[in-house]
Length: 152
View (cartoon, rainbow, N blue to C red):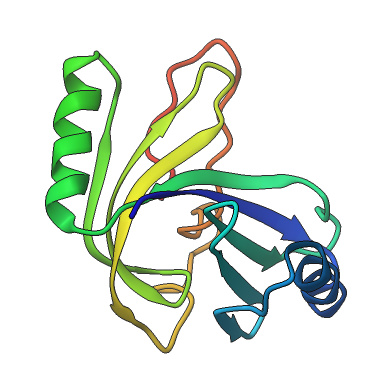
């Protein structure tokens, strides 16, 4: 099963969990420090909440969750064939999960990932981001009118 992913920045994680639990009549699939996700059956949606004070209500990134790594590889090949810059990350730790993924950016620099979860992880990121670098679930800023590079 594939499903669309919507990752939102939230100011108050507890309030967001309460709201989205009511909205979708579902409980979070995973809750960690500053992070929660919902695996909503109907409509098929992976909703990710990332505590990011001062940026609440904004989009963090978008994605499509797929079942297997070969589906990520197929998406990568298709995206590259379409002429898109596709940045691949294999066996990377992001959002408390080990993942294979590919990133592309839309025409307005919105980051999209096609990914599969390989395993649960005890940490949000593989390595804490240094000053000026971007965490895996935080889109790198892209100046409009330029070609975006990798998100992570």
